[in-house]
Image (cartoon, rainbow, N blue to C red; front, side, top):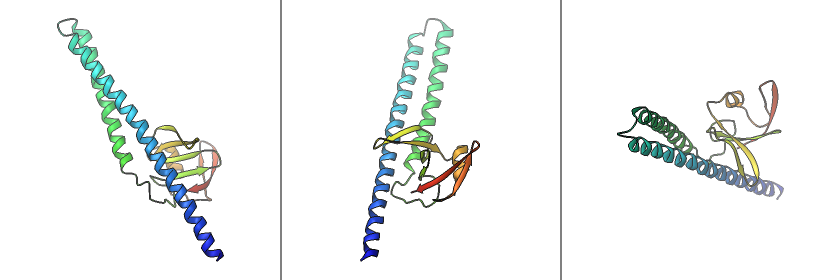
Length: 161
């Protein structure tokens, strides 16, 4: 009877963890969508300014075109990040720190996938960290109960999922 109860508790916790990961992924997508929309609007505004300056000062048109190109590059980068994010399986349980994992330490919570600063889910802060970042590289492959060092500080991994 006790083993069955423990299994039920384990599956309940697992379901809760997966739900948190799914909400994290949704919130990251929402934040990224906002950034994509802002880059599109900025690019369109710069393009419109370039069109409106035709026949006027050549320097102004070149500046507007350069701005449009900058926003276009930004948009391309954001769309590439969106593809990375869409590749994360929120229903996968990670046993070690790897892309798609949620990592809880005694100090912070992390979501490994893309760099997006702080993301709040259920009122709790998580830091979205790229798998290319030095922080991720310091904790990559670690499991619950292990420690890692980053910027002269030791962190204990309390949970990975």
